[in-house]
Image 1 (cartoon, rainbow, N blue to C red):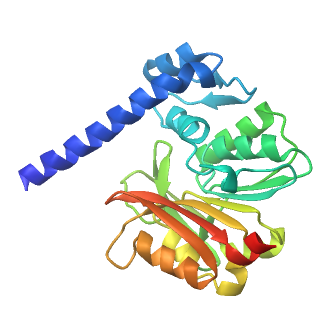
Image 2: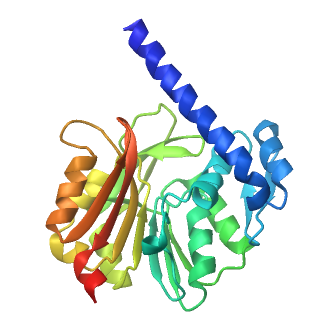
Length: 269
């Protein structure tokens, strides 16, 4: 048991070290104040990261805010290639928006002809999301504080720092929030060119409860998934989306990964 834990901790350390080296290498090309991006890891005060494309983000000390921005703008897991590139006029749904890194990224590209619907359940993250949308003077963003799940009602979400989940029990702050469904969002938006999801385990409740008709109104999906069990894993989501008519690529590790799904019908139009 101790050996298994040691091996697991070694894998985590190796992954984090690899990510840190990767971000360090790309920081000067991504950030105007790239030296502060590095130093902010050790700062105990809030600060502002400024990117070379003009985006700005207020970040909180001792959180994963900086890592979230690095992921979206450097690693680009939600826009990995041209088939997932955002275009002017796109309608985008960001579920699990956190502090708004992807919301800001997408809204700036979609411009005022497009729109980003941004959903985040945690109060502290939502406040940061609001601040970052205002900081970037974005008028094409619609914000909603809610959890997304398999049914309408309420959900209890646990958060520790900037991480949160309705599935994992972190032992952190507990909050009861409004819960809505993916279908209710799609019915309101009517057209979704890209659905981005980062829901920390809630992706199964969201997608497996959404019928084929609703899913087929979504053009593309880029999402993080977590392997919860043999039944709730990336392969399960892949099969569900393929049944709904998507061409699906599933990448990742034993713990987590990314799914890219393109609606075959929309792709043929």
